[in-house]
Image (tube, rainbow, N blue to C red; front, side, top):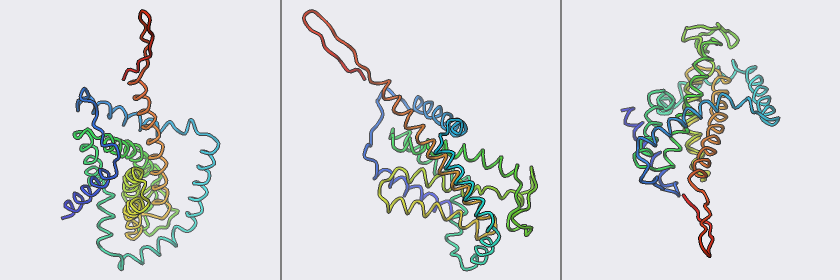
Length: 278
């Protein structure tokens, strides 16, 4: 039943992206599926590498943004226990449908179905819009996924359900009850939502996609599985990495276009001309 809902959601996303695409451009016939797959695999690896090395190239404004995020997280940290109590108390009255959507939209297997479905359509239909979206989601998810996996084990923060408080840590813990920071469901759901929303200009469609992305973080708060700082920092991390990877992919796309187009001087007896080759 849930798998059917996921499939319906995927088809809805495919329809929206396809309807929004103003350049349903198929790649040149000389490009086969295998060569596109290899190109995209290299872009995914490049996107992940860019996500980890980007801080080495941060400018003053980037460090100011980082400082603002750190300060905001510290402020929220003070109110983690109060906000957790509030959300857990709302759990009984929360709609079951939203709780189910929150769990399954942010779960790795369904996230894979959505991202693989978007990318596969773009690959086999040779649609650049879909391919870009799929590569963006996969690259960002790999980058954020590695960060959250390492962080969960390294920090070993207790979940609210452990009833030991928000300041309890067991560093390098393998216990699931001490894998609260950051929220994996929040990272995956918001990575997908932000990457997809970036493909639209319509504010109402964007808002709807972001609203779906917020369901998973809120549902994890209802369930007492995470603190407010866990889900908030997870979403912020998703936005920062998706934006960085998107800039990297756009830059690479422009470089490829530049390589495919060049000028040649064509000179002969009594004539000279400039020819564009692409």
